[in-house]
Amino acid sequence: MSLDDQFNKSDGSAIAILDNALFKFNKKIATTWQEKTHRNKSDLEKGLYLGSSIALGTYVANTGEFIMAYPALASASKGIFEALRIKSTKEEEIMWESKGLPKNTMKYLNVSLYGLSLGQSLIGATQLAMGITSGSPELYHNALNNLTNGLGVLSWISADYMSKSDIGTPPPKKTKETYFGKS
Image 1: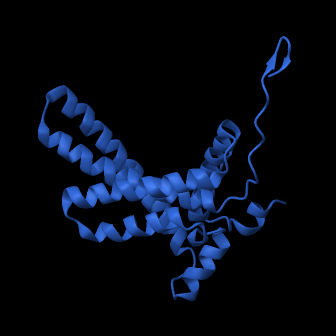
Image 2: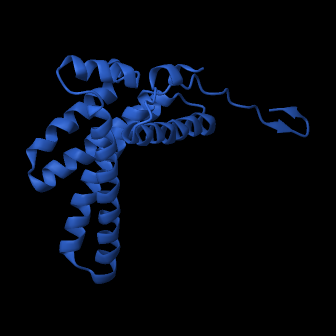
């Protein structure tokens, strides 16, 4: 039994199954990142958090919806300070339940935001394609709004899922073999 099995348990409810599926999906992305780049998953998390902050900040600057400045700042803080990142689903659950929220609130929120931001990103990509074919500046503007907000939230939630996974250290880089020995 791994640490993930102990600290990211599923009670069998629909929301827990969806949350666990998103957790495993993002864990697989982080594992693949480590295998391909030989860099720690915390580097990927940092990039996603800071990218999210930039995307959400762009959304705020473009739309004037200053309420989204709070998630942008929170995401930037998590990108800069690794200690602010959640280490497990159990830790997250305890933290929010101690503040008075009902059980599984964060699972509902994470799954909902993941789905909504994925949908918004797809709508933005569609609007961008339509803007390219039609040349409509309004479609470009709408595409920018939907893509920056959708991708900003999506990368933030993905980084949160990745920070909860325990995948160890990346494998060492392999040395290149040549006909005359190691290079």
